[in-house]
Every structure is written in structure tokens, then in C-alpha cells.
Image (cartoon, helix red, strand yellow):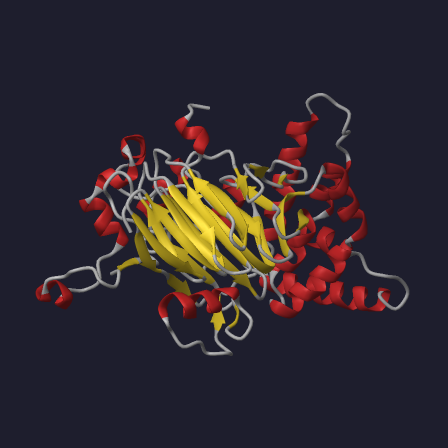
Length: 434
């Protein structure tokens, strides 16, 4: 596969993470893609959580040699060539602007997620905090980069994201006595007494939210278990008299998944977001969130830094999480994407490192991805077609992952009834200086 700048397109063998919250092999999109991409045999009861496309050391991709490419015998004997190593040897594939800003590595990490049960309540550090955490605890925080991210729903996709408004928080403190028991009446009163109409009350609201949330997350295991048990009994009793709210039903589900976990109660503090297929949600640094269920395409800055505080058997760093959050309140912005053509929708988050395109091509249709000054990764999600550059043409089938060097024009044509692709690349606003 050769691009117009003389560099070849490269097929990649992706990496899969089998985190325990993943969907089972029998139903996970991640498992389907893994089987198609690598030929691996899928275990129907094993969890398949994340399909990684990129250079991060926790899930590195390797190059797949094209059939018919000439190789020396001794080269065949060598180990697989990693995408990261290949880029370091061929840095011009990134384009000079990308090299200048991020050095000789891919600045984004592209994924597909299959979420079977809730991920931890977490946030990702900004660059300054990431450097500090990596220096202090390199075994937990494995790199010094920030991790803004965006999730684009493939199926209906549910998440907790960001803090609810002050008004909603007051309602929670009125309706959920078990939370007041844990945070104390003084902290609860601090929130209840804020007048939303006052000019300087946004700062007061943040301070009060920070105080009440920190108290909740720091509650003892014994008190937490007791409060959740009371909450569960109360909601089960009330469910016989009235319909439970969506948030109450969610909390009961989380309690089944993570019994006695403080994350069950903290879910009341967050916005409950349901994305329809084709909608996206972006998450800046230091914003709390937890993915709950569904399949999505995800893109982020190249990092795996996660500060966790609930809904997890993994290490919790409650103090760091509670001190790093912005405590911004209100419902997150949902992106529906920008139609670039009848076939391509672009999702542009407010981060330089990445953008995502969704391309749906009917049979026989073609689309041109113009040459851009940065690299791209394409994932063929469903169907089959052809990819064509200035001097090469090849077949692409579902499960294929392809690295495209900077400054390469690409024409894609659908051969089957429908070809669905996703592309990750550097945010185009970065190149336009916006």
C-alpha cells in the first residue's frame, strides 16, 4: 500500500485488553474485531473490553507484511516490527507539524470498547498532574501525558459524566437520606443554603460540592456498607409503591455489580448520559466519569493514566481524585458530528491531538479522504471495499486496521452492500491554527 508521498500504507495487528468489565466473547464487538484482525480464537465466556490501535506501550500494534512484499530470509526470521519503532525510524510519516509539536510518536490512541458492566468512577489528569503522578508513582501512572478523550456510540451507550447542577444536587440531598448520613448534616446544609441567584455563588457551589463529594468518597467501609444496605432496602420497598427513577434503577444495578462500593452512592452526583448510535461525548482532563454499558469507538491522547475512586476492584486514589476535579456542574455537550459529505461525519473535540470520522458507504460508492498534514488510522468496521492511493490499490475487509502516513490522498470504494469505517487523525483545527 503506497501513499503519494512515497510512504506505504501499513496494515496493523491490533491489541486487545481483557479487562473484567468487558462484554463476553460471544457478544463483544471487540472480540469480533480481534478474530477478524488477528485470526485469534475467541473464548465465548471470556471478557473482551478494549481493541487498541496505536503505539502506547500497554497495547502496542505491530505491522503486518503485505502478501507479495519481497523480504530477505533473515528479515523473515526477525520479530514483528512495532508501529512505534517503525514511526521512530520513519518520522516523516507523521508530517513536520506533528513532529514539531509531539515528537516522533503518534499523539492519539484509537480504541473500540465493549462495556459489559460499569467501569470505575475515574478522571484523567492534566499534563502537569500527570507528570507529578508519573514521577511519584510510576508503577500506577505509567506515562507523563494528559488523557482527554472522546467516546462515539456504536450501540446505545450509557455513561455517568460530570457533576449534576446545584438544583439537582439539592434534590439528591433531600431525597437520599443515606448520603446525608455519610457526609454529615453540616456539609449537606452548606449546599442547601446556597442561593443560586447570587453573583459569586458559582464559586460557593464548587466549594460546597467539593466538600460534600470528598466527605462521601472518604466514608469508612463499614459506614458505606451500612448506608448502601439501607438505600437498597428503601428503594426495593418504594418500588412496590411507585416507579423508581432512572437514576434509582441504575444505582440498584450498580449495587449488584459492585456490592458495598461507595461508587454506588456517588452515582447520584453525576449526570446520567445515554448516547444514541452516532452521538459522541468528550471528556476533558479532571472531569469525573464512568462508562456503564454498550459499544463505542474511543479516541484519546496517547496515555493510559487513570485516577480511580469507586466501582472498581483496582487501586483507588480517592485523595488525588477529589483534589484534582474541576467541580464544574451541568450536563455535558453531546456531539452529533459535522457532515463533510453524504458519507462522512466528523467529530471534532476541543483537543489538538485527535478527531474521528465515521464513514458509511453504500455499495459501489466512493469517497475521497484528501491528503492532510498528519497521520491517520482507519478501522474497517463492517463490510468490504478497496483503498486506493496515487500508486497502489488493495482490498480492505472488516477488522482491518490501516495506518496512513501524512500527505496521502486516499480513495475508498464499497464493494459490499455497505462499508463502515472509522478514522482517527490529528484534529484538523490544529493545522488551520484555530
